[in-house]
Image 1: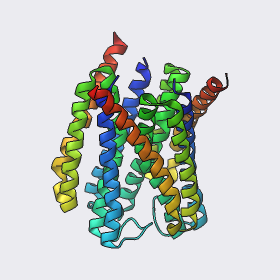
Image 2 (image 1 turned 90 degrees about the vertical axis):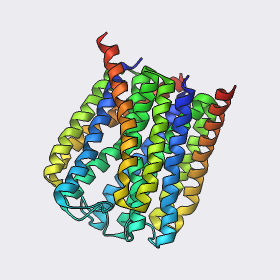
Image 3 (image 1 turned 120 degrees about the horizontal axis):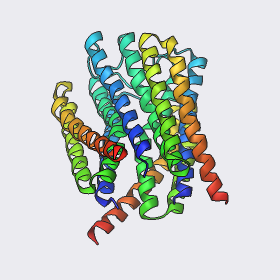
Image 4 (image 1 turned 45 degrees about the vertical axis):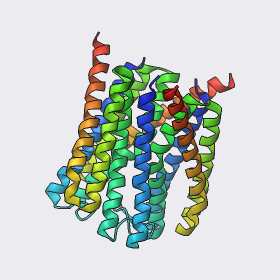
Amino acid sequence: MYHLTALVTLLAIAFYFFTAINVSRSRDKTGVKVPAMSGHPDFERAFRIQMNTLEWMPILLPALWLFAIYISDAIAAGLGAVWIVGRVIYFIGYSQAAAKRGPGFAIQALAAITLWVGAIGAVVLRLVK
Amino acid sequence: MYHLTALVTLLAIAFYFFTAINVSRSRDKTGVKVPAMSGHPDFERAFRIQMNTLEWMPILLPALWLFAIYISDAIAAGLGAVWIVGRVIYFIGYSQAAAKRGPGFAIQALAAITLWVGAIGAVVLRLVK
Amino acid sequence: MYHLTALVTLLAIAFYFFTAINVSRSRDKTGVKVPAMSGHPDFERAFRIQMNTLEWMPILLPALWLFAIYISDAIAAGLGAVWIVGRVIYFIGYSQAAAKRGPGFAIQALAAITLWVGAIGAVVLRLVK
C-alpha cells in the first residue's frame, strides 16, 4: 500500500481546493461577478494561481503515483510534499505581484519533473529488462 | 476490484464530456467564435459550467478512488453518484442564471468533501496504527 | 503490471507539458503579459490548445487506465498513443489557424471515446455477470 503517497495526494488536493476558494473570496473583494473571469488585476492573479495549480494536477498526480508504484512510496510522498511547499510559496508570491511568482513556481516544477523523470526511467527499465 | 467506483468514474467523465459539448453548442447559438472565450453571457455561463466541473475533477477522482480503496467500493460509488446528481442540478440551474447555481454546487461539494474527509481519515488511521 | 499504459501516460503528460510551455513562449512572442489571458489571436490559440488538452486529461487518463485494467495493457497503450498523435496534429493545425484544428481533434476524440466505451462495456459486463 502507498499510505504516504495517498496522504500527500489528499493534502495536495486540499491546497488546490484552497486556491479555488481564494478565487471566490477575491470576487467578493474586487467585485468581479460570475461568470466574468477578468476585470480587476487582483482577481485575475487569484484566478491564475488556481488555474496554474489546476494545470499542473494532471502532471503531478500521475507522475507521483507511478513514481510511488515503480520506485518508492516514501520518496514519492517526499517529493509531493516539496511540490505542495512550492505551491504555497507560489501562492504567497503571486498573490502579491505577478513578478514574485517565480521561486515557488520553480520549486513545484522541479518536484513534479523529478517525479516524472524518475517514473519514466523506472518504467523504461522494466520494459527493456 | 472496484467495479462500482469504476462505473461511477466513467459516468462522471461522460457528464463532464457533455458539459464540454454544451460549450460547442453554445458557440453556435451565441456566435462566439474560437478562440474567444467571452462575448455573450449565455456562452460565458456554459463555459463556466464546464470549467467548474473540470476544476473539481482533480478533487473528485483521487478522493473517490482513495475512499473506495481505504473504505468501501459501494459507499464511494454512492457518494460519486450523488456528485453526478449535484452536477446535473448545477448544470440546469447555472444554464438558466448565475444566481441559480447554488444548490447543485452545494450538493456536489458536499459529496466530494465527504469522500475527501473519509479518505484522509482512513489513510491517517492506517499510518498511526 | 501495466508498463505500456504507464509509459503512454507519462508521454501524454509530457506532450501536455509542452503545450503549456508553448503558451509561455507565445507570451514572449505576442507581448501578452501575465495574468492577461487574451490580447493577441496567436496567444489565444496557443492558450486554447493547452486548455483543450487539459480539458481532455480527466477523460483520457481514467478511461485509459480502466481500459488497461479491465481489457488490455497493450491495446490501451496503443489507443493512448493514437491520442498523442491526434494531439500533435491538433497542435500543429490549431497553431496555424483555428479552422485547421478539426482533424487532430477528431483523432484524439475517437481514441479517447474508444477507451471510454471499451472500459464501460467491460465494467458493466463484470457487474452483470
